Image 1 (spheres, rainbow, N blue to C red):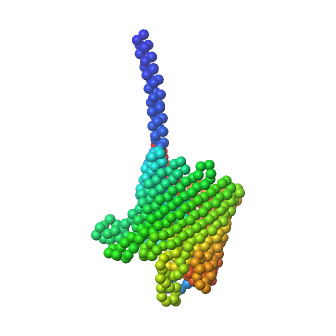
Image 2: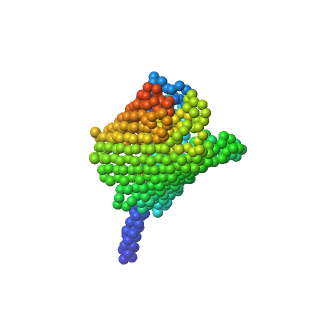
Image 3: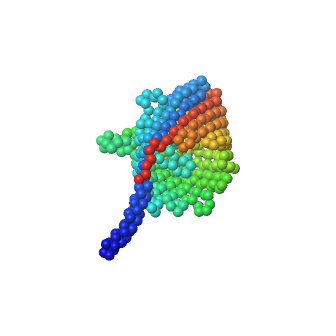
Length: 447
């Protein structure tokens, strides 16, 4: 009888312990699945053909001849390591980029290296070298079209929840840690700014496809050429972005105003505005049109070629396009806000465009755009029109691993374009490119 009771007790104990162990194992398995390590590669190779272009950087050089052309291949390779667990994320991206055959074999750097801690109620802190992308990336973006791309050494604090997003970004840049070599004088560094404080707020309206953002930036620019005369000039940018996107169409707009002083101490009074509207009748078609206006200066900061004297500036009226993904805007040939006008002149820009895309078969996308470019500034005896640009592009996705893209752009420039940008003197500028982008995941595990 005692043996029977003992057996019953033993069986009862086993029946209680085993489910407990199974539940514990299930909890452990669940915990394992919350940790993830992923290693991926990113290889990009791009061949370009350029016929006609801009001056080489020597402002006294003659205008580029029509028959001056260039063929080259640029490449970028990234090794990306990502780690995730509850409340913590980390990312490390090593990057090499350069021109095939380049002396020195290109540039190698750490493109990203950050850690992000977060709480269940939506607060987070992210520190280290990181990419920043906000709204349509016009003001702040990774500028991924450029081989080097853009990242920032910064501390980012924020909250995201219940339709609200608020980010505070803080950065302070220095050349080295040596106190006896340069002190706090920052020149020729990885970033254009010495200090940066940015506040971004976004709100998604409930039950309405409407998002609104506000952005404020305070940028400290280093002034002076030596440590003894060094100081910091501060400029501010304030503005907002709005997007309304029902099922088959969308509309968006932005406005930004610049103030404060640039690195030489001259007052800034620039502004820009943009509007865009698009229609998506089906999943395979898209049409859109838009207009960008960026303010400009009325006078040359220094005289043009063959002129004598200087024009005094009480302020700069040209809008500085900050740290955005510039290739997305103002024409694919990147004549504006990537390359400078001669003699530091900034006449602003009016960019009216129309275009769209079509997906005739699965994985294939075709698009075409037309841009009308003109100065924003009125100059005596100079026509405002800069040129007309036509862009054609196609891309094909090979699953999730690779994409093959190609494009061709043509600009019919004017005498104004020739005079202010020192472009090809027959007004004909052509650019073609083909890109292979491969992004495989080589290792991924959860535990």
